[in-house]
Length: 242
Image 1 (cartoon, rainbow, N blue to C red):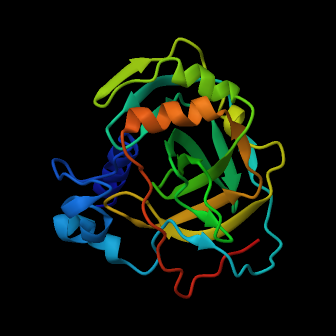
Image 2 (cartoon, helix red, strand yellow):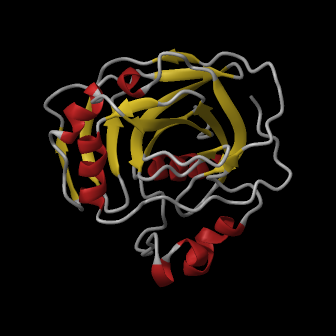
């Protein structure tokens, strides 16, 4: 049973949609976020109590341990699944937290940001998705502010695919190119922000944003053809640590 569960989690990680096979969902309308839990029994967690994204506020002071980033240059391909643009990582990049190594699987983007910080929305947000050896997930979230051009995005956006397409990247991207130099963070327990909305995800949200140019942000928004952010969910009794 454990081997089967682990295999399912790894399959989910290979697809940014994180959804049940063949179940159509969207960011608006009848198949939008308000109805995700009704679309499939596998999406029942979308009505859970520990859902993401959230408005990060009402912080609790804590001595959060440092995240050890062990990122290497190396990405295999960029793809557009109609819900996001995703860059798949090659093996070798990881983070360590809570004494556990989480391997980087992929990073993808949302515009506008899904999480809010003290009620503030950002024009774009990156999610770096990691998994440990047991399939537990940790997401590092990075906010983008409009400003100078981002070098990593410039490489990826140079091969921006249309929906349903993927292609190998001509230039290798280091995940550090979409991390802020100062890596203090907020932490909360949450979920995937797309169906099946599975809970138990460690969320590590960088306090400091990085910049992307107006043209880079607009290019992503144009290829998506629609906002791809899930509305913020109720925090309920969860602590948000800083």
